[in-house]
Image 1 (cartoon, helix red, strand yellow):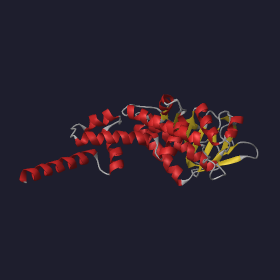
Image 2 (cartoon, rainbow, N blue to C red):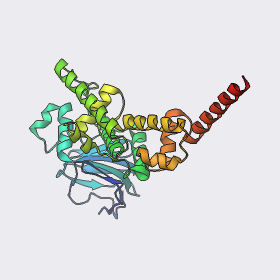
Image 3 (cartoon, helix red, strand yellow):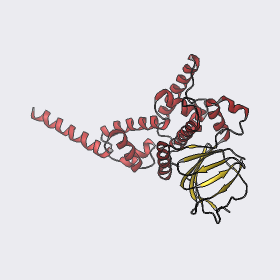
Image 4 (cartoon, one colour):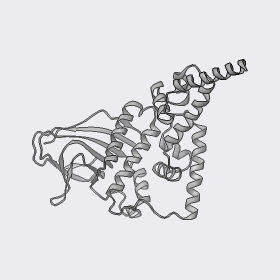
Length: 301
């Protein structure tokens, strides 16, 4: 019988929960019937197991696959290879998930209790890297930046569902003029809200409520219309303000980081360097050196 241990949860919000599961079975035969407790994704990271959905429907789960679970689905598990497995689960609040998937596949409205139609899909290299970046981010900044954490989970969901679709362009649907205008208005309202609340610790659900949208819909539309994630846009606003403060010679980088909404000096430095290719302290020194050279040129003129 499998012996599964749920590790301390990486991240939990009203929309998303991310956890690791470690399974070390005492035997390799098919275990007893289990009942899925989540709507979500399961990413095997090590090992292999077989998910038996019925007598004739088996799914092999290994690090090349992502599995889809609908709450209350029954299945059994066997481990054909010794050693067990380690997985990461990403589960979603049901209503938000159903609304999101229904926008992609309207037929889901016929059976909303079963939003995932495929039991598994191939996990691309890009999807695997996205998973590990998410786990690393949650370890470091998840509690301090829930908007980024939730949006990264939505991106993981979007790519996973796309991998399961037999039609390459299934996620791309024609958008009518009135709908496109509504989407653009939504983006404008969101940009205004983010600009008003730059330093705040926001959640995707809270931001969506503020602009009268649903969370996963907002994340999808904003990225499609702007080419940028919500937290990416918010970070750019924060960093533009940081540049202004650094140009004015602000002395305390830790206080600046916290005032702008970053979780720490290190988080601020990492984000700043990723955007501008140098650290905040280097940028400040460079500006100070230039100002000094300009003063010297003026005095020597």
